[in-house]
Length: 267
Image (cartoon, rainbow, N blue to C red; front, side, top):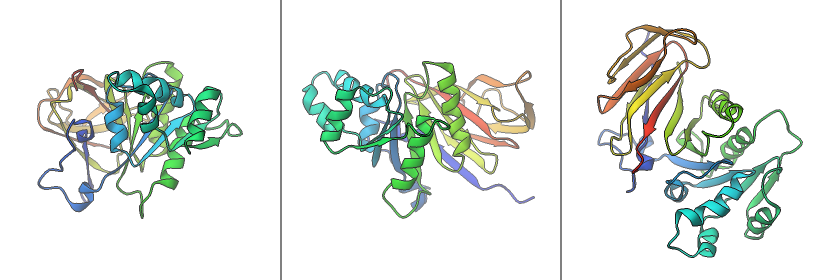
């Protein structure tokens, strides 16, 4: 069997200075296009940083309230009205059952696109936002697209599970779920994975979880407790509360896995 192609991952977008690609990065690595989705949870502390890095910014329904209220709170030294003008979403998408009318009107008056999808009750607001981004991001293709989802964790458990399900529904798109405490993304079984650890902002705690289906064989390097053709499943072994030891973690599995790593509070 030929070796699997390698997919590389990095949280360098969370670094306070612009992310610098490693010396061995290809041109494709250099041209990552970021988009941000804001869900209806408290904004993480790094929301302003990621907003400025994104080419497209979409609020999922009540996420618009969080931007309207939360950005001035994260930037208390600045004038709230100027902050709201600067952090204007490109679009608000969803059922429109959570966004406050005055917030919707405020952003609409600034040119934000309002997309009412209340007719579609079969997909989540995040699902709708991901679809919108993949169709509207400027550029020739989405091969270097990375979607950063803020407020994806915390709150109702069924919402969290719905957000994780979106990773599987869009398994060919890089999507990272973020909160103040954690980063989560999918490791598709179609690739081997090289995760570059940014020690100043993440770790050391991490986990690998077979959420979609059991894994009969998963192998890692770079962890304190590595897997060696190890089987994992619900009701059996899972790699939770593991520790990152090396600068690069590698993962290969016969099943899609969820990778999660803790985020440092001072980041």
